[in-house]
Image 1 (cartoon, one colour):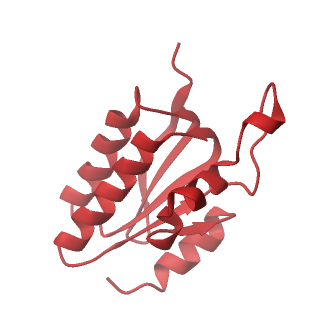
Image 2 (spheres, helix red, strand yellow):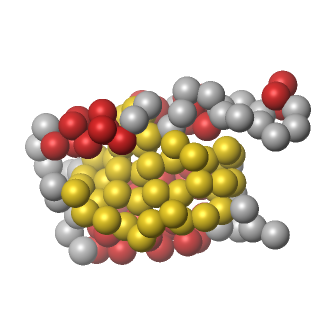
Image 3 (cartoon, helix red, strand yellow):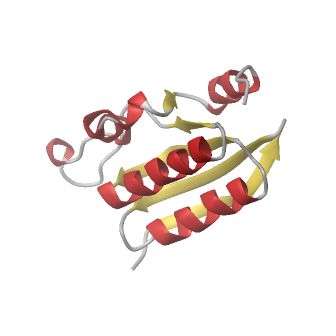
Length: 132
């Protein structure tokens, strides 16, 4: 059973496309994330906000999708991706076995290419000040 949920279709706030997701983001649902990200890029959006504040897990396939979207933005002349993620996740079973989503971004080195924020408000403020 899939535990990935898109809480809201992409909304646009001050020219920033916001995609909100929760649950687990793994190889089975990464194509859905890719479709949503690339649809926004194709629509001309160059500032993307991924609200993963309710995400409990992300794997390398999903990280690859985000890196691919960032590469696509760069190929089109620029753009930025901001990610909202909690400081720590709340694992259902064994806390020692589950790194936070933020930590996974840092381990993968993706935090060097995308900005990580603790709240949607912080991310929107940053993106509103970012020239594209």
